[in-house]
Length: 267
Image (cartoon, rainbow, N blue to C red; front, side):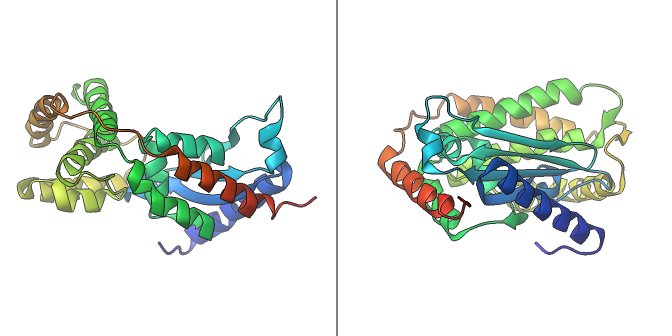
């Protein structure tokens, strides 16, 4: 994804923050992306930047009796939300088919990456669990519907907090792969044609309205979402158990990551 104008300035700020993290934390950033509405493709004018990254330390850090935290929480303010996961944590979550990690792998907005992480990403599909991924998005859709879409005045972005996971569930059922991050790709593939115009209008409105923007219910969407939740809950009960992925591949990737990242750290 290309950047321009003010976004280019923010991108340079983010890259500088990543360099500061590397220097102060003594880590190598292997992959850094945008997560949230900017990655989904419908950011509001005042949306913050949700920067997520994977990092690695020197081998010695993983052999300590008092190892460092496996999360770096660097900044949280009105513009930037920056935090990252240690490589060891990330690979363990990949083995567990953690949907958030799969979204970081597939984000269309990449600030930095490495050849090593491209190798990790090429192995990711083997660890995606249809059942785990489906339940994650179904739970998200159910919770957000009950929490945000039952009142008379609704914040516009909350529609996407239900619609996107519903479409992700449908993608998983049909394709048995991790869903794409971009909402437009999900909608093009999974949304009923009759609902595409109103959804496109909602996206346009969301991108022109502040994060706090609210309005009345969108009547045509509510029957679709309610029916979808009923259908998806019925499908959830049919999903078979799956065998976990191979630890050996991830163990090799972990060692390769330490060699690739740790060698770049200053003594």
